[in-house]
Image (cartoon, rainbow, N blue to C red; front, side, top):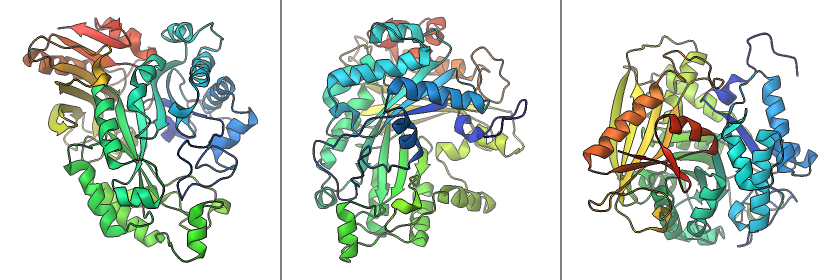
Length: 471
């Protein structure tokens, strides 16, 4: 790779949303329930291939978490990306099914890698990370909906702030057909428990599964946002593809399954993107599977870019978050109106009230957002740390605060166009006003380990694993 010029950031899209993502791959392990029909068996982490970039990097260091983190930090630094605000993403399977000893060691090694030093315990590593050069501002794990609710306290101990659920589709008959091993009710319960504990929730959704079709895909996709039992914060949209050494490959050669064509995928994706509400972010479209590992299915991994360019040319207005982020407008050198307004959308989800706060301009470009949840629950997720008032035992928790724009270094002066410009404080202040008006005496924030110092400056204090403030 050529050395970047002074001031140049290579592949700026990687940090254009305000944080630097560091993906760490788990060592191969078979899922407890067996294998879904579409999942390959290639002696690498479940659902990946030996030539997936993140797998190749992990194999080079024998899946050592510490070395994976250190190497990614070096790579980002070489491309001139800031590495002060890190989102750790643990990939490669259902992390919650590994042994607890392995889990704790793996998470500690990730923090040690960020701190560039080994600690005697996970707690010590986290304490170091509160003020280290490379701070973990968010931590994500992937898991199954049926392997989730009983591990909430443990996930908070690790510092997890986001959970991605392998939902695929909300249909029990299709779950049986693809040997998924869980039910729609598992999705509903996991979603509710995670939200009540403050986690941000992403769903992995798969188009064109055996037993489905375009009409059914779209009907069930609409239900994700019309039915209050679901309503995820984020989505990853993956067309079902036929991969080698999978049961689906056998079905394909027997002509019992046919994947969507590129044209059908494009048609479905456009309709889905138009249906996504303003409070949801589409994280990814298509999986990065090398062509040599595709038996059937489209090899185009850049469909999203093509679709979005087409929609922008037609002046189509998508509501989803990523399409509206200020960072992409800056990248494309668009004219940006700086007359900002804070808008609030209230909606019912998982037996609670969600308040989606967003700072936008007249063109609906998104500068920052906050997710506030108010609920009166008895769920396990709220037993630890999440504050309540005496009036109706209502509980309030901020599940996410995010200011968009190109990631900046800690302490680096920002402009009114994104990070370090006071937008986060504006959002928190408005959330506090909402909570006070509901006669709730405390507000909790689910916090990445590396953001605790920021919240302390705003008079929040650590209580269990949450940052809490008396109002």
